[in-house]
Length: 137
Length: 143
Image (tube, rainbow over all chains, first blue to last red; front, side):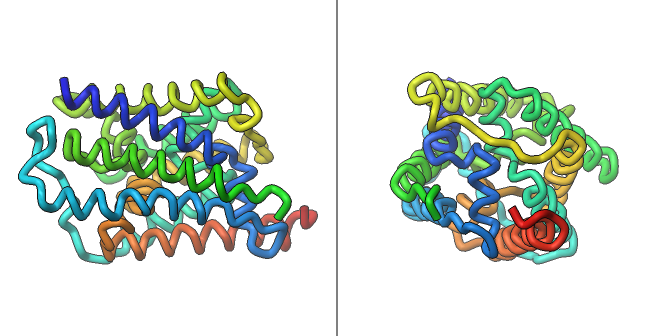
């Protein structure tokens, strides 16, 4: 139950934050990525605002024996920089640059009801499915 | 820079950070959207329900802001349909291959100073900026 409540609260706040910061607007994101154009540094302030909370939150989490739900705190343990990490990040960057949507904002923007957002989100799910098929994970 | 909105950006960013902190301390999970969504595909098991609830919350939170302040939540999509579909495929496949996106590697991974996340974040920001440069200033009309 605690797991579902925290997921709901976290999701609501995450979605609201994406809307308040305008990061679910692809034009705003592309405005940040377009350094040679009419540059809009807002995304850097969003990142800084988020890190101002997550840096202490992760530090405090290390000192906890377990989460409120009783689950263990699942921090990723891998440290290797491999071709999949770099290749995956590059493919993601290409897709992010051409449309201005990354996964969180694309899902949050489903709230606008625009059919273009649904097309992107469905294609994104299909891309995730293709990965699963290709790597059998 | 007439569209620059640092205050609402930082406030929204802090809300995103707090959301990640709640998930981390509440149920020990990383708020990486591509991982949460990708984990729903054919998964089943104990992680299905909280993932679904999180994603419904994500849409609901944005919807609530849209009701309260339609101008803030308004979005502009410049990409055409075929470009959106291609971009969606790349984002879906790439984030799973690279184990994360702007939230998992960016907001959460950078906070832990994870070397993998620092590399991934540098790569996807650099490739995205290069892509925008080519599309806007090399191929496009320089809009």
